Structure formats: C-alpha cells, structure tokens
Image (cartoon, rainbow, N blue to C red; front, side, top):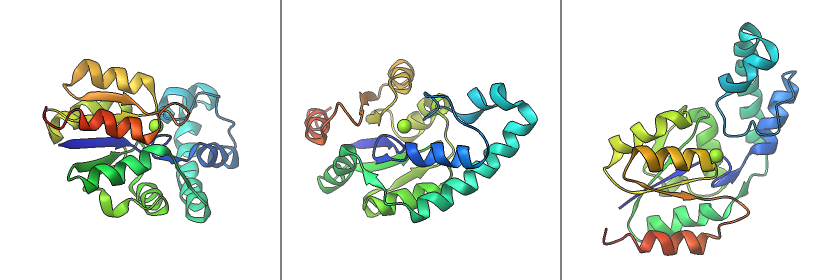
Amino acid sequence: MNAIFDLDGTIVDTEAYAREAYVMSGVTPPDDFFGKPWHVWLPDKVGAERAAMIHDAKAQKYIDLLSHAVLHALPAAQAVRDLFNIGWEVGVITSSCQDSLGIALRAVGVADCVTFRASRVAPQLRPTMLNEVAPRGIYFDDLMSTCSLVGDKTDWLAVHASKDRVRYEDVIEQAQSWENF
Ligand SMILES: [Mg+2]
C-alpha cells in the first residue's frame, strides 16, 4: 500500500520559519499564505518582477532558518513511521525545495522511512504525481483545498491531517481500514 504525505503543516510545523524568511526578504505574507504557491499571492503584493527575486531570496533564507531550527514534528510524522513499520511504501511531497525537504525529514526523524520524495510540486500538480506513483493510496494534507483536488482527480483517499484535528492514531486507523483495498 502507498501513503503519501504533504510535508509542511502536515508532518512538520514550518509555518513560522516560512513566514520569517519572507519577512527577512522584505515582505509580510498574508495570513493564509502557508501551503499556497508563491506566485498565487506574491506578485499581487510586490509586482511580478520583484516577486521572483523575493522568492529566490526567501528560499535561501528559509533553508538557513530550517538548518538552525528546532523543528516540531506534527502527529502525522508518527504515522509516517508507523505505516513504514507495517510495510507500507511511504512518500513525502512538498512545494518547497529538495534541500528543505531533506532537512525537515531528518529533523523530525523520519528520513529513513520515506522511500519516495518529491520537491517543488505545487498543490495543483499533486493529483498527476499521485497517479504516476500508484492508482490508489492514501494522501495526507493539512490543506483542505488540496485534499479536495486529490479527491476529485484521483482514486486516492485524501485525509485532512490538520495539526489541530487529527491524532496519528486516527490516521493509522483510517489507513489500516484500507489494507485490503
Ligand atoms: Mg501543507
């Protein structure tokens, strides 16, 4: 069985660092920026030309911040380990870059459990990527909009893994109900 997890906000709490990296780059992001592709909101704020420059600056600052941060694992990080331990293929997808993905997975102690990694995959591209991985599986994301997209465009079960609402036991229970799927 395949399980794929979104990274940021799903298995690791990186929102404060993403926000700080933008602020250090001269922009205060809107309240709901986290998990959205930068080109959806940044050009409106600073213009298209500056947006690309600011995004590049932010990306480097973000890696620097993550490298020195004490990152907090969210409940779904334990689900990554538990599903790996019962023999599932476990993957992680992020809109962020490969370096920050590696840092985050190591920081929360699940790097050795993840057999599939994909970086710079925006939410709208995730259904296609999931379908390439397998016809079915379980996908976990903290953004309801991405869960809806996956639900609409794939046969994967999309689980809303909000840091406030889902305990990892619930996630495992849902996953196990799919073992004979
Ligand atoms: Mg997320």
